[in-house]
Image 1 (cartoon, rainbow, N blue to C red):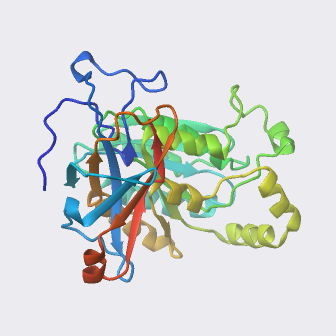
Image 2: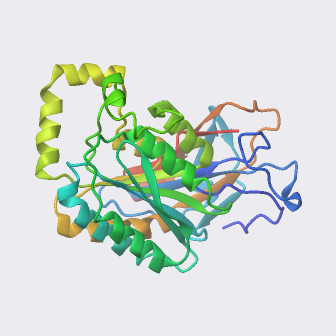
Length: 339
């Protein structure tokens, strides 16, 4: 594998992102100012049959495209980057019966973090609350997770606001870290309609609710990948079937996109872990942390004349000879970034 680049530059190495000196990004210290850009794309390659990570790939085994144009890969690493993890808990009524197993899963995942990894804990319903900011003191994170397991909310679940605020918290992580949101929910959102916004207006932030499009943009700008542990209670199952068969609910979803774990994870290159057994939730999350470490970080220098201030689409393919050797593969990678 190529050595780590020696040029000093602010690498936003969490998932896929790029440095720009626009007003929307924090300014670096003087030592980091350089005319050289490096876009780093964080990717996971899984065997479709076994769902195991495919390791040991080289730069020549990938085909990376920005806006349809292939880019030479100048940097590749695995398991070198510390993690910045935001544990995001859904506190609504339908999740409450399985909240303790979800928290137990988060605690088991926490034990798989390395000493240099940091984490934060957030909870949400209509609005979002930060229980613990980023720290490498895992005892403080454990205490915040246990606190989250004892909370509940009678309010609606506004997914988009929760994800927007989690992305904003993840943006506080230092450069050179993988920025991760681990979302613990049942995937039963409420429609952010005018009626519900009026009902819960006292809990809505003064700035107002953020939309699904705004939350995705924040995730792309901050280079955050979303992983979800989906665990449903009996209440969740009944609500899911009701929504599925209610034509007015389907109409409302089109008018007021409520957010969906599969869309958020697919767009950012993450995974949804569905657990039908509360007792298995912890083991699945612990395995997830180990899988995150074996993701690939691929770096390339984008064209100097490429447009700034807009979304740049990314596509990553595996070389045909590797697919022939490894069989059918799944490539998880974010859909793009803002320069």
